[in-house]
Image 1 (cartoon, rainbow, N blue to C red):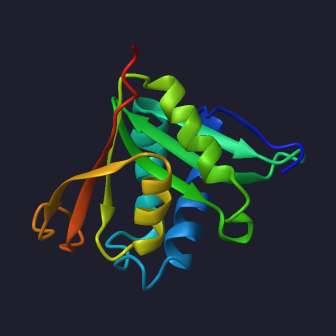
Image 2: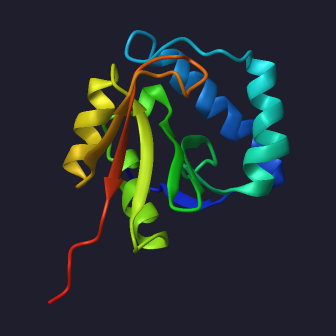
Length: 155
């Protein structure tokens, strides 16, 4: 997409980050379990925890409209969401590439077992399945899969 940039999010970006998370999660109904937190709780969490304590990247169009969000927590991709109207345009791939650049030693993430689209997406980006669970350890109590990416070995 032309005119798209990604930048580190700051405190003033918390509402935009939360909006992308909420809209994207809502659009994924059926592929992932329903949210267990209200929109207000998500907004509070993003403003009080996510933006201040994690590495948050916000992708915007040339008008400053938020399009996608990447949240890194150590070597974990904690959140990666693309606003529903712009999915399939390479923004998620750009953010995965950014994450790999920021964490060249490797990455981990969790995805719901039911989210076949995310599983295919991450497989295309070199992530492999490392663990499956029955979901008893997540808030949604839904089966999930831990995926990992390791950089290619140098010769």
